[in-house]
Image (cartoon, rainbow, N blue to C red; front, side, top):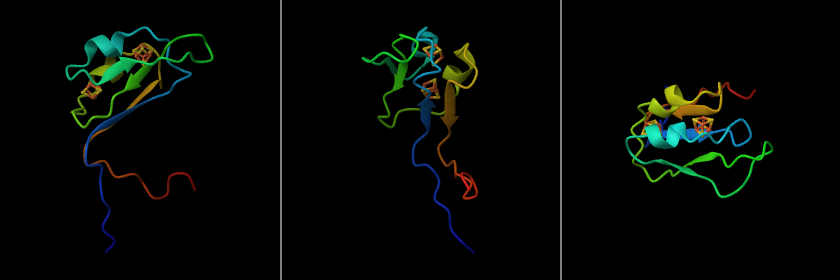
Length: 87
Ligand code: SF4
Ligand code: SF4
C-alpha cells in the first residue's frame, strides 16, 4: 500500500488578493504567526502574510476571525493532500 506523508507543521495559506487587510487574523493568532505584508494587493490593501516558522498549531482561530470567505485556508499538521486534487 502506498505511504503518504502528511504535513510536518501546520500551515496557513492566505489569498493575497482576497484579503481585505483588516488585520483581525493578525490580532487573533495566539502564536504570532501572521504579519502584514509589505506589498499591496489588487484592491490596494496590505494583506496578512503567514510567517511559516513552524510554530503554527493549526487552531484555525485566524480562519474564524476572518470576515472574508475563502481568504484563509488552514492545513493542520499531518494533513495529506488528496492525490486526485488538480487532475
Ligand atoms: S492556525 Fe492558529 S496558530 Fe496557525 S496562524 Fe492561524 S491562528 Fe495562528
Ligand atoms: S482577517 Fe482575513 S481579510 Fe482580515 S487581514 Fe486576515 S486574511 Fe485578510
